Image (tube, rainbow, N blue to C red; front, top):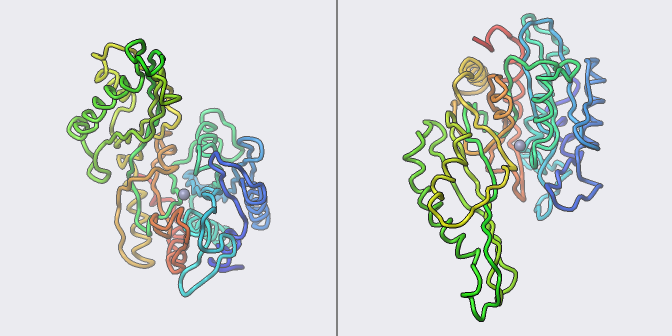
Amino acid sequence: MSRSLSELLSTLVAIPSVNPMGGEADLDICFEGRMSDWLCDFFQYLGVPWERVQVSPGRDNVFGLYDSGSSCTLLMDAHQDTVPVAGMTVLPFTADIQGDRMYGRGTCDVKGGMASMLWAFERLVRERPAGAPRVVMSCTCDEEATTLGISHLVNSWSSGGHRFCEKRPDVSVIAEPTLLDVVVAHKGVRRFEIECSGRACHSSDPSQGISAIYRMGSVLSRLEEYARVLPSRVASHPLCGSAALSVGIIRGGSSVNIVPDHCSIEIDRRVVPGEDRSLIIPEIQQCLADLDFEVTFGEPWVDSPPLTDEDNSTLASRLLECVAAVESPHRAIGVPFGTHASRTCAAGVPSVVFGPGSIDQAHTKDEYIELPQLEVAGETLFRVCSDASRLMD
Ligand SMILES: [Zn+2]
């Protein structure tokens, strides 16, 4: 091995790849360009085919290929971006090590997972184990905000857009911090806006107008009841729990002395595996149907499907077998947060989520990772990459 896993992670942490997430972008640390440059150099150094695909100006996906000649393609995906660094109480880009921990932005989410995958990939290239699958190492952009990178990749499978990821892979492992458990299911989410209109007038005589805020009050009490009964209407998932609805934002009115003519809310609707997402908006429309005013629904701006455990048990079993052999038994679990696996799963690719670190440390002001977990993840992923016969049914 030319470098240790913790050296590899230090290198990744020292390359800022902050996703501004809609906020003001400090170009000294924001976007993935520097990370993409480094990844291209890494694959070039390994002597494997690689490709840098522009997703939007200045934002690229980078892929490396280990072509074993196998008919089974394994996709390993890790996102290049991190959340912002404002308010951090540890240095974000110096990868300080204290005891068994490395601190810094992305150590846990998800440069730790990416380092484990790159380390396994490098070892695969050097050792060329017989019977290995074809492995595409995918480093996608923009996971933390609008998931441009994975959407671009998944969409390309129907249009033949990538040189060596031209069709969908047979299985995929997505890096996120899972404490080395194997995530086989998670909820999806749909986010959308609802608007009510009214008629503005001076607040000295409200009878001349129609308050959009009062109208929204009626909408909200129906939604509160809908959210309360939702768990009894939609079958809960044994690993993910119940479907859920939450109203997170309300906006309305322009001045305290004007009856408001406009009010809007933003809804976050969590979807469980097996649930039909196309029914969500018609169901809510139904529960508002007897109101005597018009309610407008906006197009969802987030629409991530759930990850279902219907077809990933062979892949999950193999990962669990490998992690148990390397360290100790772990579990197949469901989690509440969403990941890229929802996109690959929806495209028909059996997918699981696996990585070192805990989601509790992701996005925090003192983000860190336990270094021994990195080593276990790297060794486990190398074993998974070494035997194509154990990955699929
Ligand atoms: Zn992540």
